[in-house]
Image (tube, rainbow, N blue to C red; front, side, top):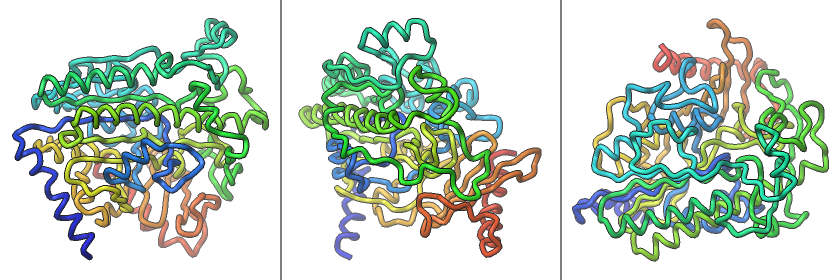
Length: 462
């Protein structure tokens, strides 16, 4: 009881800290592509992530945070616009705020309007030109495919998409994009400290996005025994075909993966190893940035948020990458640290990424724009034991998903008719290995969740 009262008291100071100083807080917005909640702070030990774990120990970790769309462009456009996806909006990896939500002010633009110096570093929107006017600076070094070995460089010259799906070059961190971004963010923090102007500084780290390229020292963190393969490399029982895919992003873009047929068994552990190495690489860059924030004594005037734009399949259900409405693609990390927040808070309640825009406004003391379709998570930052939402909603192509406390339910529609559906009981089946949507004993659960989706469509799609 004492600890809960302390949490409420301590975090009621969030706004007061900034009001007393007469300054708006800085925002450090860390985005990591394709990041699963497979980190030490989430109770997973196989991936070494000490710096993200440290950030979690200094703030509040959300265990059940869900993206709106399991593909990068659409997920980011939804978050930055504060709008949910619909059948006509935020459908693909190339979705943009400019083209699909042009009438609203986006997150960075809103902070810029309120006196912030806004900096986009790395991959924030899918396209660096999306809502370019919202940024005072845009820095985006070369993309994901920074091959270093001569053979991959030569292949990539003649291949639009790239070469091998992994590489372990023996190079310094700042030879690759992640290191260059960390260097730039450190410069930005120093400028913000000098200027005194409130700054909205982003950190767009692409790894662990394919191809899995990270300095060799991060690959060397892991031995063969550390690599854990998915326990369920098979389609769920009764799963509709529309819910599954053939890992097209991996097959189409990289020359060492066949376009059709089984992925070579000997490559699968290398994919997992590469994912681990890339997460540790990005984690190290987060550590450098947090160290500089502390060295500059800026932590007490900065709100830090770290999120993964969606989850990722590491062989679960015989799928790789994202692009599906299974929990492994929809659930992603979310950590918030700010002055006054009790350290090490863990929020079990459901939240969704459309809630991030209103939350940052709320924490900074800015009035919330009227177009927002999410809710501020500030009550959960004040008391992580708060229950969160009753339901959160995601969408991919024609499939709509609702996650409630116990169940995950999805429907696919065609001309207003349900053509496929699936239901998973996360209490009994957290790996989603058996679709129980057609079992008579779950008819009431299906009906209730179908009603939630129908109400959601009516509210946001019409």
